Amino acid sequence: MAKFELKLPKMGESVAEATITNWLKNVGEKIEADEAVLEIATDKVDSEVPSEVSGTLTEILFQVNDVVKVGQTIAIIETEGGSVAAPVTEAASTPVAEVAKTVEAAKESVAPADFKSSDKFYSPLVKNIASAEGISVTEMDTISGSGKDGRVTKEDILNHIKNRGSQPIASVPASIPQPAVSAPVAAQAVPVSVNGGDEIVEMDRMRKLISGYMVASVQTSAHVQSFIEVDVTNIVKWRDRVKGAFEKREGEKLTFTPIFMEAVAKALKDFPGMNISVDGDYIIKRKNINLGMAAALPNGNLIVPVIKNADQLNLVGMAKAVNDLGNRAKAGKLKPDDTQGGTYTVTNVGTFGSVFGTPIINQPQVGILALGAIRKVPAVIETPEGDFIGIRQKMFLSHSYDHRVVDGALGGSFVKRVADYLEAFDANREY
Image (cartoon, rainbow, N blue to C red; front, top):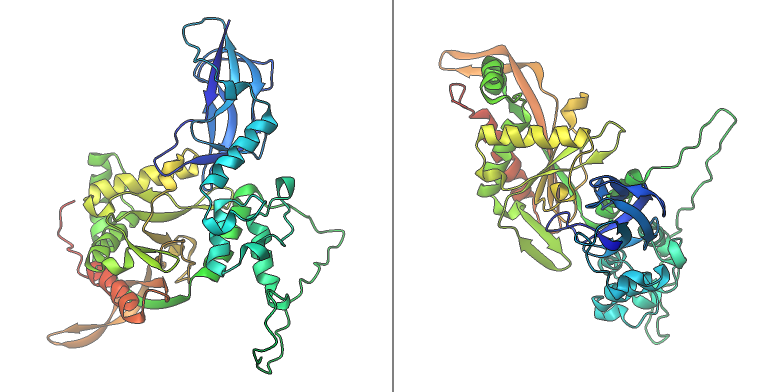
């Protein structure tokens, strides 16, 4: 007999840890090679961890809801042969409680200096929110945590931020004169009335995450919008003409999305000020143009897979990338790295019939573009012989951007450039 260490596999360059959501096997059960042993979740994607060997599960080192780093041993599998088993390190036989302490100690070692004075453990996300909101360690230590072992969760700190207006944060020396302004009255949560015919359903894990992200984004960025109407008649006619041949030659359906993504990538090259991220008081100018495309899942949740280096793709390559990510999102087959590294996001609200929308920025990006439904509308057409009324295919582009770092001139010019590229689309182009 030999023992094999099942480790949390590498899930992409930007994914360092995952949360265990479910053990599919119990101690003592037989496991076949490539059979799923447990389910894990990053902040965006759920996936399974298979076994590399056949054998019997003898030890489980982490429990459901534990956060595990990539490369850590999560279980021990006893095999019949000795050649395939990796040597079990001393840490692998350590009790679960001690392993958890080791993980927490490792995280604490990279904590910002101002958190080292606290005896409590705070996750990197909670620390980032605290830093962005100017919450001190002393104030953090007063927050009652609802997480495991009393840890402060994202929901805890967001609720604290929401209600802190009515709470004294720090005493002010009496020698400093205070303005005669009445304290704001914090909004109190009103209990929801439930009757016998109502059904109470708890949010699933992803919906809770989405909820937290949306609230945090609105509290972080100063959202402002610009809208522009675009004539896409040439695009509609061209697609209708070539989509059959395109699918026959490339084996891919040609939707409008890759055409729009192509225009957005070009505009981002023209306006690199939109291809940035914000980290506190610093602006990060992104070298690569990685386009996120918001996709609705069958269960109603939302996910944003990312097209890497979108500006380097031709229309065929863009169509293949869009279809691949979209199909794998619907099938629940996205990998964690598929949702990482986005520098700008596009969402197609027109899919559901919306004329336009006001999307929320995907942090830490500074802009997101909503594509409205394409509609036949009467329009004034200018010709050398005069103006006349005709039927045109039009849509709205809605650009939400972060007014902390993007002013109206840049935000408006960018979406206008996207519109210019779409209206100048060559109806005779080859694909």
